[in-house]
Length: 141
Image (cartoon, rainbow, N blue to C red):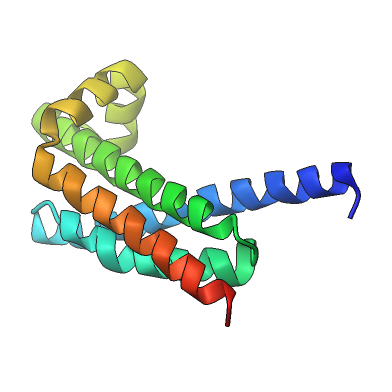
């Protein structure tokens, strides 16, 4: 495989893994919104699912573990941003998209940082580790 073709394939794999991570974050938001509780432990099953999906469909090479871990961390960041935006929208009596647009990235980032604690970060890190392990195990099969 030529160098430019390999670079293009790696870029496409990174974009695909990012899209899978964002989709997992949106999926993660559904039970969180329904139960009205933070569910950081969902990083573990979603990490396993992302690890398997990335290793099987996106990048069936050794770099899949890194991509899967990054996709899981992206999902965790996205669901945290969605939760912050939903809380802001509820407090201000406005729609979710309006709240996200008006608040901007800086305010959402600050609200995300304020809402995180060490236990949630530990769950997110464990989910990323599960994703990397699952991807690494799935490559050999």
